Length: 360
Image (cartoon, rainbow, N blue to C red; front, top):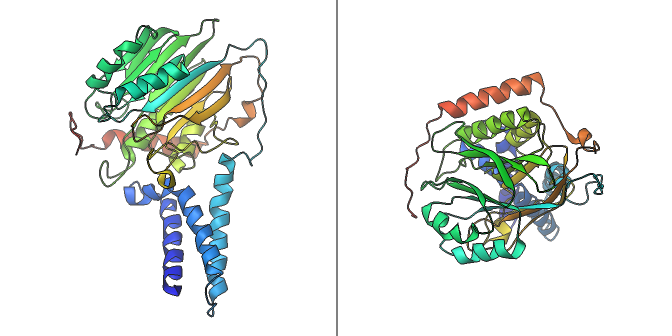
């Protein structure tokens, strides 16, 4: 037992140190995803250690575990209701409440009816699907009677994207920021009560042993979207499967570059992947918004057969309320230069993806 205890401490220290090393290889980036799980294991190991025979130096191990808990806890507490944030009440000059659903449907998921039932049940004004291919597009045609406006990027490489709206689409475009097979969408919308806003959908490739070796394309794509969002003068929402966590360096750089707000702070992790394994679930489907968009509710919905849980959000727009301005952080000159470098590296990275992907 003593050997297992020491091994766990060593492993937890390693998994904590690796993300601190600014290397884009997946070995260094993947441990960022597991910060919640690492913290749980730290607590379990600390408690288990109390029941061991106490050899010499035992308390050094417990002290290290306590330091690890504090290190991770300082970050994670921001994404819980324990972290104090100001609550905002909807004013009469704001827009009506709006709702969206963002869902990575998993291209090889054939349970189309369950997703359609989900949309009909929650009735969002807009919804975004990722990994949606031609089969998914055909299945979702039954929803078009209620969602008259849409923007479709139909791909078979697990990076297809479909956007459906009951709100008027004023304009829509597809961006290929770092690669010609990785789309992001930008949709300009107008609400029924006359408010305009922009909806961004993103889905960059993840760094992993089975997909991209590095995070260069992911980070370059996200930071390109951040620069674009910053230049838009209307309220902005950026949503999607970021294949990233909110506390990673590139996510923080995204937030500062875009001048957008992370609504998870003071609320919850909103963990989405993997949908089937509660203990191995990471918050990688993220959302950021501008200061004149106010979030009433942000949560996951029921599983519909995908490997991701869908994200549901209720929000409103208020141009007259400036109470969120203090939440906006701006990148320093050094951070702006770092973002530009990461964008360039993302464009230069040659992702090895098939045009048509079959389930392996």
